[in-house]
Image 1 (cartoon, helix red, strand yellow):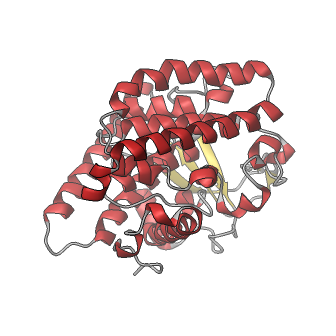
Image 2 (cartoon, one colour; image 1 turned 120 degrees about the horizontal axis):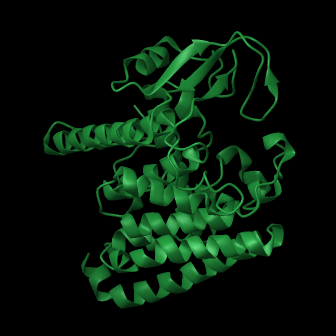
Length: 346
């Protein structure tokens, strides 16, 4: 900390310069695949949501800000599924991975960088439903003009995700533990039902009967925000109790952070963009607890994996992030080796 205080101004100048380069890179990608009006929408949301938070950003500890942006030019990897990194930062803008039924998502990366900045400004503040939707508005900025009801709005209609009998990281569909966790949520947020219909999957392709559907509860806007507040309160209570317990470990705190992340995903507070928004908050909570972000290889796993397995995914992602920083800017974090998070979780 002494070294940081001595070099604080220099660190801030370096960080500001790097941030401008990352912003420019994100905007360049967006412009390359996005109509000018969508780029303008992202800029307007940035002015509306992010810039008013500038005063808050000045109160964020330098150490948190440095750690948050430590991946440097590879910051984009926090916004892209690990399984798609091979296609580069514009993978979703161009749909280079061949998923999403081949549909491009113009402006995705530019909107996510706006979301990064919004989260940075909120570091150190207690997460609230209002904050969640502000960040969601940023992360969905490229959809704001085309589908106004998507960005920053509450989901009030029924929705679902299809869980086939065998699905990537969940080869058995859903484990008994995952089913029990979903059934035990109070207040109720989602229901697991057997899939007996031909319904569209997440990629728009019709799924044959089999497996399950994770159905997200249909509630009014006030109830949705009240439920989210209830779970956030429980999360902070858990963190406070764990921090005060001398027998607890760093892994206990990470379990709680992984738990609230799964709640956000399974609650589906918005019609679209829930995974990306929940991931932004996952890394917010990790930074605030003294850790560092997680690079998720399969974010969809938060919907279907039992908590113990999802916790493992989060910790493995933290190890990936740490290795990425060591290769990108090792001089920034000589203390990384001392952080008590194992490469292989318990």
